[in-house]
Length: 211
Image (cartoon, rainbow, N blue to C red; front, side, top):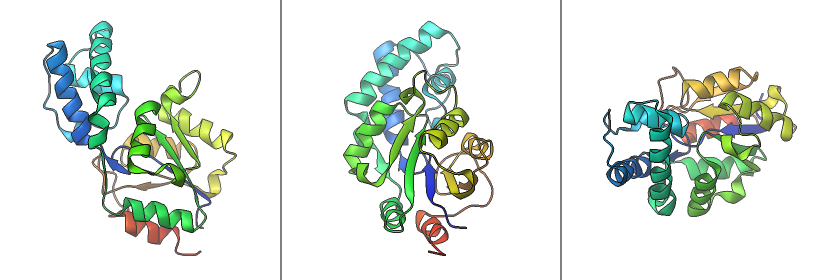
């Protein structure tokens, strides 16, 4: 069965935001005078910001994490987000799915403000029927599984004809926890999830094969 709607993760699935995020981490470290406990590599990208900051700093101390988060947001929101690039083939993927009449949504751990700035920067706003982030809900969603559940309810999407695409095990568990068919974006930089489309164009062919 081909999908009526598709939920996309954002970082590591549609966009490569590693250069902008890692550069903003480095700038925030310099601004705050803190030191990184781990190398700043793309493997950090994906989890919610405060979780990632705890990994970067090697601490769960809340005041320290919040101070660093404020510096990171300042650096990222000012200019860092503009370094975000699309994966090869993603614009063609989104255009093709829209042409096929499939409704597209974003479900992301990224804050809603920079998510919308990036969409505007890439000129992608018109391709999505809805853009959802943990902090876009009131109260904020506790995790991506809860966010996906809320999106399904708000948008009146049926689980039997809604797919989800992501590059992490959290994406996979969020989809499966809501009875959605999941596809691993094997072109992204998340955890290995086994078999999945190797490119956006391969996924486009799969999603529109019977239309």
